[in-house]
Image (cartoon, rainbow, N blue to C red; front, side, top):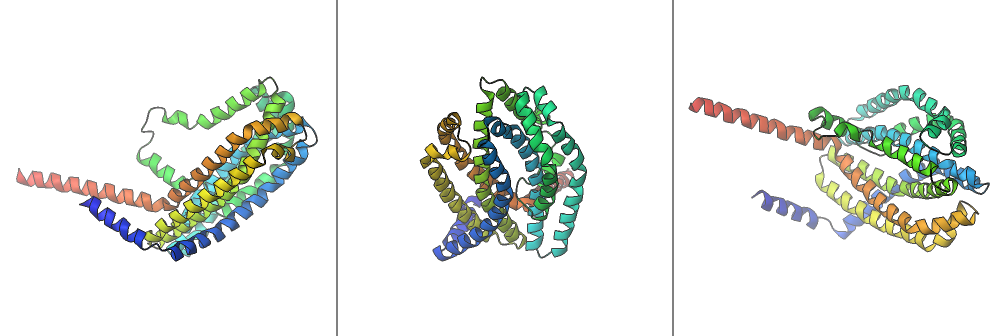
Length: 357
């Protein structure tokens, strides 16, 4: 019976999506995505241009970017994690017309990240010694430390910009509720928190012990920067999707959520295919944007197929994750209601059995 009702409901929703309505939603999502992507891409292009200029100076300058980029992105994703919870909560509060909560959420998020500045800056200042301890080449570690030290002021600015503009990443409050309700349900749950740190340490160790560590780290810098530049396009689409989903759920309009999901996936498929095709067709000249070294250019040619595959999968992962993240508190509230109904049902059954006895 429930399956029949679900099929009928889905049929009504799909029949209500006409081509005109679909194109209108695509246009709305595209306009929002362009704004998000443009803002984030312009911020990141400063690093990209610096990397390209350093790569044309010498190979060591290019390879020194790789350890600093990985360390920076670990911290950047933490910033985006804070901003994601802010984005979802603010979007749902705006959709529910509770405008005062938007400012309260923003101020609380900014204050909560201020104590994290100092220890991260200390890590960046002594990055050369830390990288050498985990197996990185000393020359590369020294160059990476110089980059990190001079960019500490920019790091302070990015925290406030990310939080104030409600950028997109993981749904922080959803994770906290899951941990509170059922902490570490699987063996090894605590270990997985440190898995990312171990992977980064392994990456530094292997790169530092390769036969030609400067070449390998230079190739990683090129590929990592390219995927990061492209990532801001699906990032913009996912930010638009998360905002639209949270707004419509806040306004109690679930049919519009499904329409947004279809429109966003159509945009993501088209964009990822076009971007990967362009990079694959330009593989023989693509490496010259980063360096004039023949070895680096030849290595980039070999890495392009894997780079294109990574671009496609990253696009799908970012958009699908943010569609779920935009549901945020409403999914959690629905789960809590179901648990409450089950507990009430169990209490009623127990009361009935007691009365019968």
